[in-house]
Image (tube, rainbow, N blue to C red; front, side):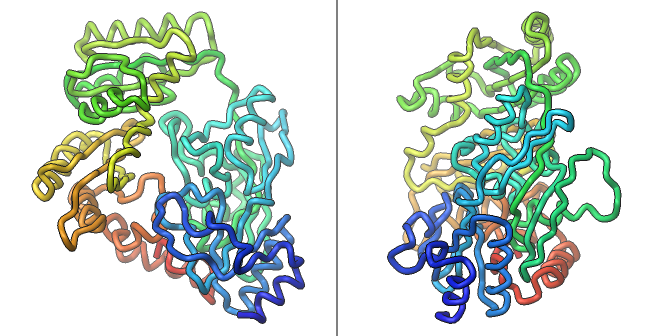
Length: 457
């Protein structure tokens, strides 16, 4: 171990290789809080060349490397073991270029998402990728997990926002294709190998984002509905009447009652006696006609029976209060919570939620189970809080929830990645043949298995 550390210090400089007491506690775990150990060392490269040098040395010594970004993940994908080296992208940060003609933004992988969003906004563009941890999540991590977020229904997942990418392979080879073209079919689209592979095939160092025109109007409403069938009717009407919403967030009643009634939220847009709630947002290009069109859409939905009640945000402050309900931070005050991020065919989400709740309640009659999510893009979130009996733990909850996902032919991970926490359940959503190909790709690009070992597969 001392030989590889010495070689890394020679190549990167002593200040870029942290060991022992120089390693801060934040490098112990991502936001899943499942990490228990500090890594052997933390590397802090300042550019792509130093990332390549670090990986080349680690590969020569067969030294495991765990990439770490903003550490906002929830699947244990950035957790390192005591014999592993963490490679932090904190210093690989910055906006390199905003090309107005191509409508692209080139940034380094350690750049916080919010900084990239602000750079786009200042130039009159929109970077659609958006999630609650935008202030600390880094774009490299967003891409390595193919992050989703609030606006997938309009703009797609993280991979849909990327035109070009630079990544470093396990042996230090730099693959740099900072493409700015929307159409480019010259051979394999190699960037897609690294997006969503959680640092197991290579470490992303640069990205070229595709930007969109900044919206000129944003209209937001909080709605009450009588059943999940009404939720689906409202979604289809929004797609037809509005050309598609920019966000469509669904909340089951127990979620709404708990969150809206909590002092952390301080907002209750509608009464708490409805079966379902939807936060719908539409962004458009005409600040004068869009609000009229949005109100007409809601009125037609009320007359058609899809809606029971609705309130439109009259200003940005009120819209933020609607979002505060949906963000559900009050759930974090519950004991022993376990958060799930699953995906189902949209039409089956209502039945899945009923079945999953029934299975959980049969095991823990006094437990709390909250269902909510983006829904329009097939993504459902579940938060559980139960009092475990002796010998029980979060894995008992996992087995029930993921077993239900398997039975409904869904995905155990919609947008949070696999990491270590969902690795044992990957086969619930992918076939043996698919997993075998994943292993083959891993062997081809990382034959010594040094990159984020034990994660995903």
